[in-house]
Image 1 (cartoon, rainbow, N blue to C red):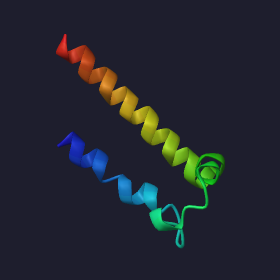
Image 2 (cartoon, helix red, strand yellow):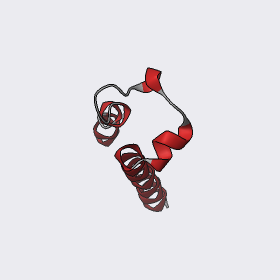
Image 3 (cartoon, helix red, strand yellow):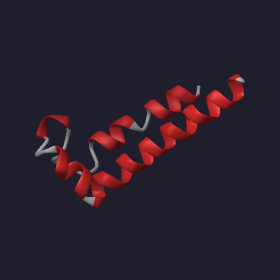
Length: 60
């Protein structure tokens, strides 16, 4: 169920605002440097790292 919740974020990250989607990539720097893309990307990376760390701790 958690994986489904995490995957539900992908459309929001791919379409941060109208006119920008996976096919309209201007460049990686644009996605990382602008807050409208960078902050959701950062949140996704931090969230994924937290979930992975939590899963590894529970596996012990």
